Length: 409
Image 1 (cartoon, rainbow, N blue to C red):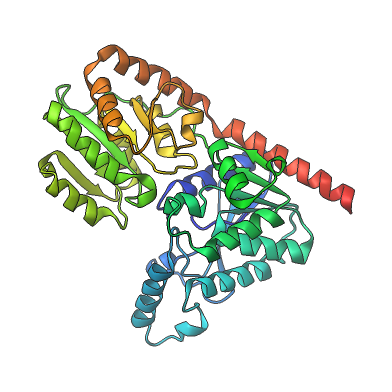
Image 2 (cartoon, rainbow, N blue to C red; image 1 turned 120 degrees about the vertical axis):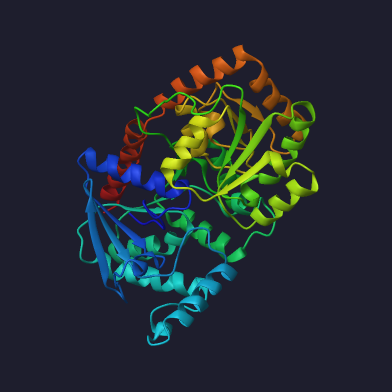
């Protein structure tokens, strides 16, 4: 299996999903070897993993192989270059130029070559690659071994950019991955429709496997006064997640109810702009930016909230909505999300409809019956969306491609 993040070093839902999928595959008797770029994190802990060497960690039946690379989630060409130059400046006594690519796509080529070389040490049946940075490695290993390739798409370039300023090189890598794969796993029907419309993929090649949550999620009573009203946003503060619509809806809500606090947890390239927007709208004292928080603190924030809002512009799934629901928090999600396909007891709104979003926020905060219904039934639905069931679907995909590969041999 190939991915670009894995707990505890995560920045979004992709790593959470990869860990859960891998662990549940292991619990069902499959052996998983997960290749991950270090992103420089391990160097901070004094662990050296240079060139094609790797650090092997085994936990919960999953063997993780960290390959020395500067690749991290959600990189752009500019942000990668900044990381490279920073590493070059810090490590003046080492020949960094021999270890890392000076540009993003060159680093992806290096990671691809290292994965292909290290994969020769393992006997495996399936190649499973998560999102675009790992597709080239999956394609190369398939070419070298003849093993079937399953690509898992958690977010397309159209999701990350909102359809504006799509990087043509990323698009081509994604498309090549989809075309080369024996089967594609999409996290929602919403994502499947993008693959068909934007990439020209045959619908029969795509299997939808929604993301899930772990069973038995802890549900605690609210940890703040009943009179407090907290509306929560959790996620990367980027165009894809729609933070500007959250801030503008907050302005509308506060015109009717000034006793509401809007809490934003996460970081991203739009964070400074959102802080400035809140100031421009005159609502700064009602909008709290918490920055990045450890997972335990995020869970506490869910439990403190009266409402969770996910206003994503384009959200292939949206694990945070399930996380909130499983904590007994009412949820509002954008209609442009995959999680809206599995949560019926959630209010849904077009991301751009600020007025409707504000009205729904006020309704949940002020109508006890609606609030109770969303809390109770939303949690029941979220609890039913388990990884155990979803991983069974992934195993069915494996069996299908293995059978097809055997017939073709």
